[in-house]
Image (cartoon, rainbow, N blue to C red; front, side, top):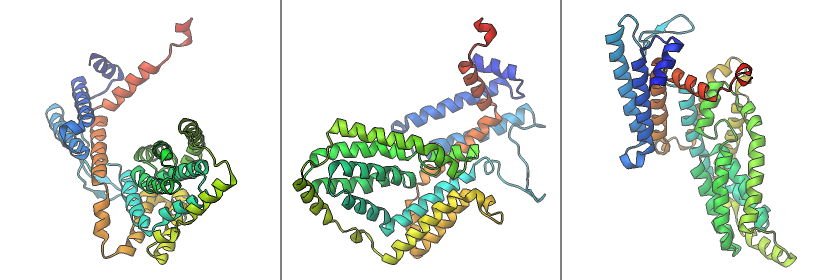
Length: 372
């Protein structure tokens, strides 16, 4: 702990060293509680929310007794760009609402549009295109897993692709390949989670913090995802012995078996299906071109785009929207909202600065003079 006090002194922070050390211990305690979440039998949102409340209370009290003229937390009204002042609780501006709204909007949008059967329809179409060849099937399912993981959560992607994999291999009488297929698809869900800005929560947080748009993020990550996908597929081919069909007779029988799949069975309503296709295309286009939207619409941010399209999609189930609200991962949203508050308090206590300087000191290389 002494090294952090020393770094605090050198950096000339106004926050007392013991305060920084105290909140560093609080941060470590929170990380440990999250690591032993299953042992504690508490949801991560409750754990982090409790620490967020504790941090707000203690930092307010410490500021009151140490320097009332300059409290540690910047209480007071917030001045808007138009000059008006608005009073908000200290924890409201501490939360990065752009991240929260993207997660909420994208979750609702995908939950609604997936009911149209669009993702299952696409999966069955590709299955028929493979003509039952195991190697082509692995390539198609692998690519589909990456694409689905880029727009859906990993669990939903695995449910769709994994269930179709089980049925397809069962019909082709190749259940011996099932474990290899499922393991490969499970690995590729993580690869697909790197592809777009909305693929995973870490992507959203990093993109928002660094000001990275949807298209630049995609163009940067796509080559890495492409290479990782190819390596995973070829490694799976070698490890699990997935080979192409050898004879024309085998290919003919396999093609007839997968031809019996009917993609139309997954579509409950043709009208809703095509509306979902248009909404999905519009959603992707607006996210990709969000920074170039005219008439200052770009100022609304990607969070608004996600919520707006979620609202449009919900009109197809206007009498049962509450069922979709229940499907939202509120534990995840509560976790990140609380985490932003904790990070905000840690920033005020100079914990983040101290950690950054400590990491920088550990990673710094000796200069030319020292090397000489």
